[in-house]
Amino acid sequence: MPGQILVVDDQLLCRMILRAGLGSACYDTILASTATEGLALACEHLPDLILLDYNLPDGDGMDVCAKLRANPKTRNIPIILVSADQSRATRLRALEIGADDFLCKPIDEAHLLSRIRVLLRHSAIEREYQAHGTSGLRMGLAEAGTDFAGPTRVTLVCTQAETHAQNPVASVDASLYDMRLALPDLLGAAAQARKPDLLILSPGCMDQNGVNVIADLRARHATRQLPIAAVLPRETPTACAMLLDLGADDVLRLPLDVAEFRLRIAAMLRRKKRHDALRRALGTELDMALRDSMTGLFNRRHAMAHLSALLGEARGGAGFSILLIDMDNFKRVNDSFGHVAGDDVLIEAAARMASVTRPQDVLARFGGEEFLLVLPEADMVQAILRAEAIRRQIEDRPFQVKTGEVTLPVTASIGVAVHLGESQDPALPLPEQIREIIDRADQAMRMAKATGRNRVSTMDDAEV
Image (cartoon, rainbow, N blue to C red):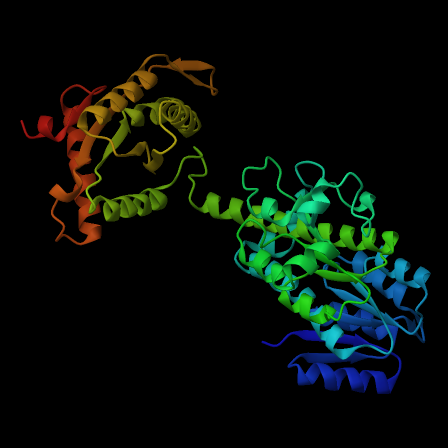
């Protein structure tokens, strides 16, 4: 679906010119001639971007922009405010009230289209996150937690000589950034405790490394999601539109207006906060989909997927073990004290088991009162030792039940099965291999139940 752009301009000729130019770039356009009509169409269609004129017959574009930003439905729609007024005060006010950019008439079509592409890239990222999330994420509820963990870090990327100079880079006011870093140091800065939140490319860096430095930063994992602002000398022939299309978020020429640049930096940081919040929310939702809601452990689906991956790796010779853990006489807990008490026991049992597992182990609630522990690269001896540690953790002290304030002695029976890698039958389909190893652990666990409970058994015990 092509991007949809709302054009709000009181001059018919301007609307027609913009519609023709945007149409040739394969954008759909919606046209409005007044502030009232523009606000109504924005709420009705939720366009991908709004081109908003400053002078309108029933109000000015500044007021429209402020109302759009105040409305939860439209607050994140990119807005480019255009005006024949080229004064600094008008430009700064537009950026202060929330316009993503301010362009002067007559508009340079190539620059306008590049700015539109930059803003639509960011909108597409947000919509992609929201499309993969739940209804809460799609409605933007994740934005409640958009603050950075600490203060933001704006980094000036400059030449090696500039990083060692006693004085700040002369062309970029030192109040705009927190630290200076040469490009090679930035690209090798994976060990930094705090990575940059935004990059400013100095004129010297751009001159020394060329325009492709932006494409290079966009291609690298450590920097691909960072906002990038490029600063160019006044006389450079490099087109700003080219840098925007290569991946820069903003491009300014010297001499810099410090107040304007600070507003633009703040807008880029706000957008990054929003993206980071959506990304964290989506990651949380994906993690929750793999978790058991009551115990917080992984669920059966994740355990089976992990086993499948391990079996694929095991064909190269690496073995692993699994433990099937079942709470003994658990039905009595539910029957005597109720299901709430049973839930308390399972939650506490999960915590006790997790306390004696390694970071690489995968502990999952397999169903009801059964748990599955996957032990990568563990042989039979190691698996039995881990099983005994879990059994003791569960048995050693009574479980506290909140309902009735009583304590209950609880034990567990554990079955152990080992996959020896290449020694197993590789001809079996993967689902059958998973079924086979779980079945062996289940048989061992049943043997533990049959021979007195509160014990660890292996397949050797089951075959006796």
